[in-house]
Image 1: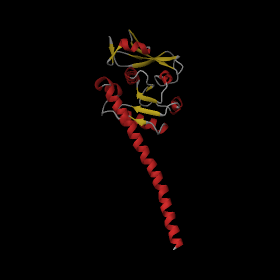
Image 2: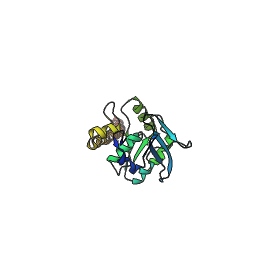
Image 3: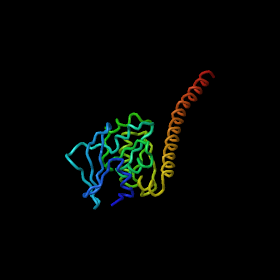
Image 4: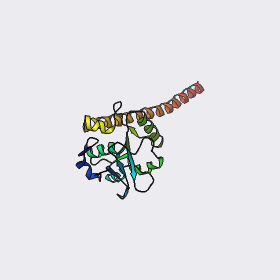
Length: 204
C-alpha cells in the first residue's frame, strides 16, 4: 500500500507517520514536540491507541509553534494532515473525535486572534461545532459543502476552494460583529433621543 486516505504515504513521513504490517501509525506530539502516543489505523478501518493509556490531547499541538494570528481546528487526523500538506505554515489542530472536545484545550489557543472551525458537514460535525463554540464563542465556522469533510474539500476541490471558504467565514464573522456593534450603538442612541425629548418637554 502506497497510499492512505488519498495521501501518498511518502508525503506523510514528514509528519512522523509510518506504515507497518498492522496498518498506519500516526504519532501525537506535545506542544514541545515530545512524542505522546500513537494511534493505529488498521486496513479494516478500525483504530486503536498504542502503548499505555494517557490523557487525550489534540493532534498537531506542535504546529502551534508555527505562530501567526490564525489557527484552524478540524475533525480528526486525516483532515488535519490534509490542511498541513496544503498550508505548510498554518497551525492546525485535529480534534480526535466528534465527542472528544475538552474546554481546557482552549488555553493552547490563547496566542491566536482568529480561530477557524472546519468540522465535518454532518450532524456529528454540527455537534462538535456547538461544543467548541461554548468554549470559544468568537471562533469562526468554516461552512463545508453538505456531507463533506475538510480532506474532501482539499483533495477534490483544491486549496483555493478551502481558502474561499475561510474567507467567507472571516467575512461572516466581521458582519456579525458589525451588527452587534450597531445594536449596541443604537441602544445608546435611543437613550440620547429619549433624554433629549424629556429635556424638551421640561423646557416647554
